[in-house]
Image: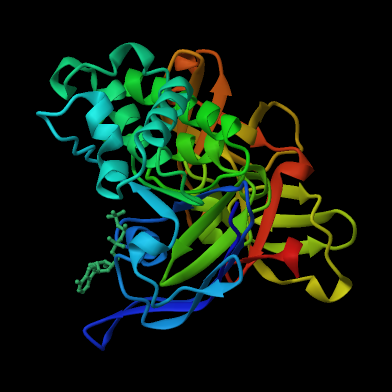
Length: 363
Ligand SMILES: Nc1ncnc2c1ncn2[C@@H]1O[C@H](COP(=O)(O)OP(=O)(O)OP(=O)(O)O)[C@@H](O)[C@H]1O
């Protein structure tokens, strides 16, 4: 059981290199928080500051109401699982998992009970007497997690735990982590990943880090359906959300935007009379675009390239007005559209509007 509270947490290296500033975040017991963001944005640094492996140079970190900025890692009740599951090669799974408890001089009965519980949760019962070299990558990763579980920490920190695994194993281990979380509802977990699918499927809330701060915090669906800004809009989802410049031509409960070099698109984001004429960017996800033959379309463009992925086809359009090439995603196989002019539309509730990079929905 652990609540974490970060207040204006900052990290400066060498007194003058700001990596993170003004990080404010409340994490409640039982949450699985995922940190995502572009390479170098400070995900690992933030995780390591929470673990106590990296000094917090500004602000405050509280665990269960107690300020822990200067509490050493071992006394924070936190366990960290790294991407390189460095197990002791000459020790069995059981010895690897019990090592920390033996060092802490815990009674044998307590150690045995902890190992038994962790092995059951991680389905490692049959492997306890094996050496790491006789395990698969996924099983080794589970042993690494097991080493944390036996210490019964309040908070688990995962730094890209699956990045060394091949694609199939990643999926299997991801599902195991989801089940692990379910079997320990009172544990708090923080997880760093580059993998969007991991973030979307595992997180109770995702924290998007960018430009030294938090770009948005929300449930996976909030981030996907209602990004607060263009950065999050384009960071979450693949291919990225299309942004098309235009001007508001009609306001009200439904807003109409005339796109540069395109048609008029309707958005369910409400606007006020004074917004008429405002220069905005309209955001539409590739998967929310539909091909239409009607006159009510967002834009018409020539399909430059098609990529058939099996269940869907990606359509890459030529530039529309001043806008970058737009990508559409249609169910099924549509190689026949290559080189053809196609009209694309989107339902109003799938159309976002951004002004100066920020979503009008959150005004
Ligand atoms: N000792 C250091 N001195 C100065 N700058 C550092 C130091 N350690 C890390 N940094 C910088 O801090 C920033 C954040 O690094 P960090 O490893 O936390 O990013 P990350 O988001 O985890 O990146 P990645 O996704 O590539 O793993 C980077 O720009 C990095 O260059």
